[in-house]
Image (cartoon, rainbow, N blue to C red; front, side, top):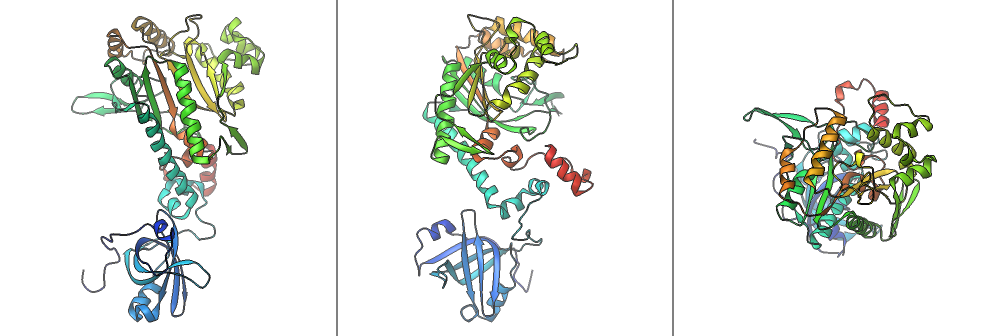
Length: 473
């Protein structure tokens, strides 16, 4: 290219963050910064703008007499959204605003489209999710949510590392989708000529590591489930799973309480936080209630004295002949109990039929050493005293297969691993996306996932349909 300089510049380093320029602010100090021009106000022979980087904003000032006609005219021609590099000197404007007096600037990247109108911002829900890059530019609160998400993950890793857990990685493509009852995504490996499944959970691989001799392991993992989309569900989501040898589900409750209350304190400085219209209280110890006791408390029916189908009938539910007890219990518990669980609550001792990987209670083998954690009506965590008896595990897998159909494969290699002896252990899974929702006061999972799954845009016929879809999911 000859003639005019390209509006798409190159390296502009070193620079300082705008936060470090502002704090502490020293008049007369020479600085070098880069960011996006958000506002430009031209007033004859001088012009003011706002320069924004990832950390903060600062006012910039250009004066014709100092820059010269050509450079000043170039500055006046800039557009909100352009990316600039500036060099200058710090001073306070007449109104007391910290400002960079520009002595030199470079246009590093020219915006082609227009940013949303400054007073209204980017409001359309669907556009915000589809064009997250614009959402991040104009909505500072959105950017802060994702900065907090990053901090939450960093603090979780630090918490576990300090307690001797080792971070590991397990396969995301598996020949048998194991560890959870969920519909998997299927792909195909051409060279091996075999179908593979995107993992629905890393559980069985992490337990193999306990067999191999690692005693404390965790994985912050991406899971994929080919199921519904809602304000609480995204087909691709992030989980924390950890396993500790020689522990049980009581130890997992302690870890869960300590980790989450620590996050609440670190982010908010207190043990209660606002979530929607509620105030959630995180002071330890959290409430604990057994599964069947919670059902009886909310329905008045003792599910342990009759079949699940009979109990459901007393409550006015009807289920088809193919509905298993696990489906009936799960439906009624979700309808009658979950929504009422606002403050952190551990639901303990789930039926064995609902918990094929959890150790059965010694005093009542129909129940298991399992808990789920609920906060504001959402399930956030699931934990077991892990089943390590290979014979009982094979029987449970066979019962599960009979209940849900032949498409459910039994992971024979995992059973083989158990036959080499897995130590007693506690295992815990925490939904990171939902945890971030709670900690950042967001009511939709799509507000804490940078690029949530969306329907193809071509199917949107008008804005009304788009709004309908936004409310639906």
